[in-house]
Amino acid sequence: MTKPFNAKKIAENVYWVGAIDWQLADFHGYKTERGTTYNAFLITGEKVTLIDTVKRPYMEEMLSRISSIVDPEKIDVIISNHAELDHTGCLPEMIKLANPEKVYASPMGVKAIQDLFHGNVTAEAVPDKGTIDLGDFHITCLETRMIHWPDSMFSYLNERQLLFSQDAFGMHLATAKLFADENCPDLLKRESDKYFANIVLPYAKMVGATLTKFKALNLPVAMIAPDHGPVWRTQEDIQKVLSWYDNYVAQPFTKKVVIIYDTMWGSTQRLASAFAEGVEAEGCVPRVICLKSTDRSEVMRELMHAGALAVGSCTMNNGIFPTVADCFTYIKGLKPQNILGAIFGSYGWNLMAFDELKAYFEKAGIPLVLPNVQAKMIPDEEKLLEAYESGRTLAKELLAKIN
Ligand code: FEO
Image 1 (cartoon, rainbow, N blue to C red):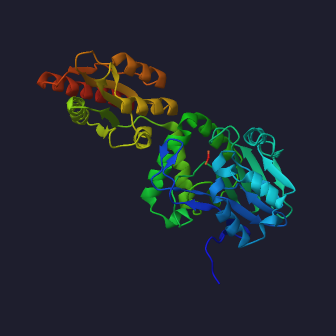
Image 2 (image 1 turned 135 degrees about the vertical axis):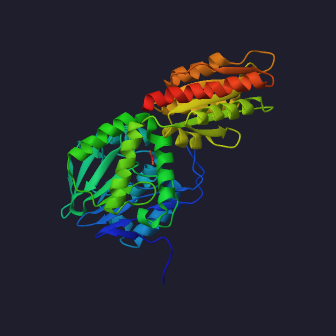
Image 3 (image 1 turned 45 degrees about the vertical axis):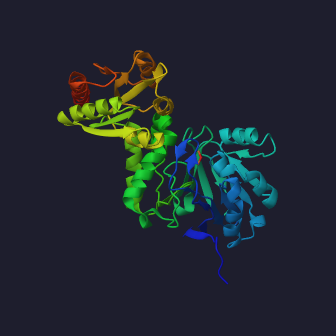
């Protein structure tokens, strides 16, 4: 009799035993409208080895998939590539159930697991570039700090040329199609971009250094198995996702100008539209986003590939509009690089909160290009022309950076 929740083979003696979360809508502030997967993998060699676990509520699903191959109590080794709870949420229960000979993590991972579980889980540290001997299989481990936490590491299964990359090269995408080449390429690009922009972007420089370190090992890679989303198994796909990461790390200036705004009575909206016309007139590409209808995580996906950010706010209670503050707080933390900035907005009886907006730009490290525009009440033709010219000025500055 067939049953649901079986393991899926990804290579000889290697199985996907993770879980699909079709309903995840928010991942610590990042809107995940397409859900996600928590990938765990099982190696059925002399030592039955589990790579990562899943988020706590999905433990039964993982156990069912493991059981379709081997009794979970027969797991000899658990390797924890990343301590965040979407991968270690059921680690204590798995250790209790399987009583494995060894639990391995990076040196920082050992500390993170101790802190998370208050000393109730102990693991053995694998040194950077160290090898775990599983008898017929060998795993080379590489510290990959800040992809995504300080504890993160890659595990490379030498005999299958298979890289277990935890958060790196992953995406929040719930799909029954396990392999990348079975999914829509445009969707993969979009979700990979969104994942990096919202999760890993502040650490982009460290990601670049880590990937350089990994490439210097000259390990052939036949497959990349991340902890979220599909597994990359063709050389074309592997090279593609590696090149995406090169671009994420570099964040070159582009002609795209992201214009975010919110408005109460339409004044700031009109300024945004005029600003966009000016950007377009100079040959750049405006992407106008009203924060009433678009989530901050989508703004980040757009911004990662942009060359400029213009922020428009109406004035409310002497301050900037709450949606603008929310979005800019988020942007500031994710620290996009190679971005120019501009401000516009409207006010009624108190002057616009320019200083508040400027402070956000300063903290985000985004230099402002002047002039900036502020309109009292409803912008007249002169103010709309000012916004248009401001858009042109920003675009010209941006083109000077690109050329
Ligand atoms: Fe998928 Fe950083 O956890």
